[in-house]
Image (cartoon, rainbow, N blue to C red; front, top):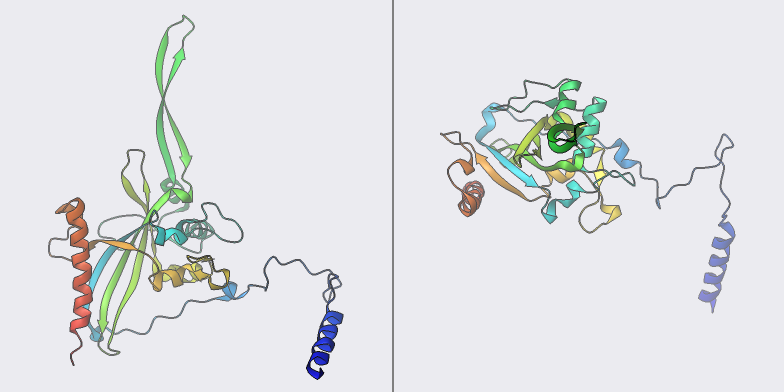
Amino acid sequence: MFLFTILVVFSAVSYAQYDPTPRKNASGELDKPDANVVKRNHYKERLPIQYPPLREADLMWQKRVWREIDFVQKQNHPFYFPVEPKYGRASFASVVIDSIKSGNIVAYEHNEPMLYQLPMTPPQFEKSLTTSRTMSTIEQAADGSQRTVEKTIEQEMAPSDIRRIRLMEDWYFDKQRSMFEVRIIGIAFIAQDPDGKMTPKFWIYYPHARRALSRAENLAMGGNRANSYSYTTMLEKRTFSGLITKVDNVYDRYINSYTKQEEALYEAERLKREILEFENDLWEY
């Protein structure tokens, strides 16, 4: 009976303290409505974790790997959706393109080898996002004859047209800390040309883009809003599915230059397993 009385009193006090009317701030203005259960300010102030120091003398082993992430795969959908920005969320390509246009990230031209020495000017970047296609139309002349006329239509590529990204990453062993780690060096954004060929449109230097990407978040698979991740976290926690297309080799060649179709997939898995086995072989008991 005593416990029941305490619960009733507590409920009455709680109800009495609840005031459904809008509150006013110090300036006398009404507080603005917030669509979230709590104010989400953390991601606006988030900074990426600094890389640990690495000396050249401590670099015992290093290998560069190129890996492509296809947004068609379900595990990579958090990078592709939403197709258009909404509810404070935007796709990975949309965040990067907007950051480049605002000057927070620098875009680089694609070249071989990729050394990030050719930054794009704003007109060059706009041109890289422009796609052109040829349409054939039939026009009727004044004398009644008909002729086929080809017209070239140019339009700006939408962020949703970016269907793949290519990671340039370095796997290395730091003997000072006895750590086998990976760092992303750069990211290429790949779109499909009118002829069907997948072509890199531009690159970004990832270490310089980490700050901008750490303040853009998206929902992880499962849709848990309280467990949203920044794109920096998603990339560095490896929450994606990628396919190796090239590993440092004497011939400086990509996998698809000497194997095709299923054999290329087996070769990519073999190279992936080779890197992991190297890490396992470092430890002896």
